[in-house]
Image (cartoon, rainbow, N blue to C red):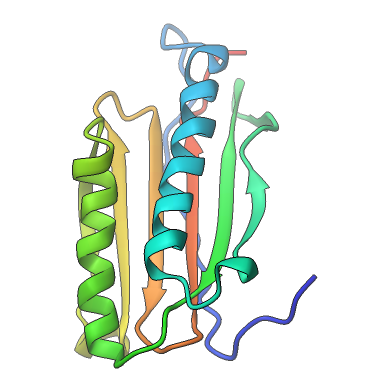
Length: 160
């Protein structure tokens, strides 16, 4: 395991969706989740990582995680933020996150952007979900070069 940069950003994704009784099965949404998580991660690493070799997928979303009356999938990955002036980094990164969710993968829409640089000391958090809200992602970044960008995602709690 590699050493974490000094400006580690911790992300907790809180999507309180309960198990479905008549909703989709996890088998129906899991393959799309795994594919989308990898696509979003690869795009952001290619565009905004200071060191793509340091990018790390912590949880690839391939394991069923028990929840309520079903299971869900979870994804977590990190990479170091690109070099540059912190405010510019955040502005460029914000554009990239929106492009990743809204242009590159039109099945997702950004549900919130939390925090301006002055409010959170140079950090931004973006949340996105798909149309039927069975898959959600969160991206948190600090503008400081070398700080860690954290991407998390999960499916809704679904029938297995």
